[in-house]
Amino acid sequence: MNVLAVGCHPDDLENGCSGTLAKYVKLGHKVFMCHVANGDKGHVVIMPDELAAIRAREAEEAAEIIGAEVINLDVPDLEVDSNNPAIVNKLVDAVRYAKPDLIITHSPDDYMKDHTEVSRLVFDASFSSSVPHMFTANPAHPAIVPVFYMDTLAGINFMPTEYVDITETIELKVQAANCHQSQLKWLKDHDHIDFLDFLRTVSKFRGLQCGVQYAEAFRQCLTWPRVKPVRLLP
Image (cartoon, rainbow, N blue to C red; front, side):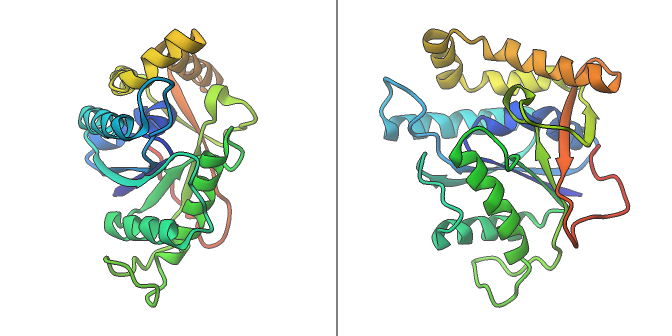
């Protein structure tokens, strides 16, 4: 299978579903990690142009650990807009390039506008990618594929319908997240958050819910024609 994960900022997929993505890779599937926003405003001291370049490098390093290919749409932070035709076209073209069998993205109830806009973008673009007369660099991808929403930060306001056992890939998840030093150091210095411990704690909490050591949680988008009579999560 081809698996397309679409996150807002360069570390969001590592936080929400990288254990699952690493498991897909181990099972022989092709994984694409698409970052919509470039993360240019995610620091107090580092200026946006410099930070965007740093975060792009960090994303490539993290994807290498997971075994995924990166797609960077390079939209500035706080400018993600699901009604912007240029951004929609970028994501439609990314879907057509990846030719996914399923897509993983943010919950519609996530904690900030950029994230919820990405959720809406994925829902719309994954449909539009199948329309032949919507022209982008890549040809139409005929399938309207299933979409799975990944966990919110700390699992707040998120009731899972699916779990993935990531006990064997939890260390890859932590290693991938650790590549994002521009964010980890800032969170520790300014917010006093040990984010790697945060990730382990949430993964352990979700594991307790489904009877394994570590897990990631998902909820399927239940709209026609995205529901398939097979399990697509690993």
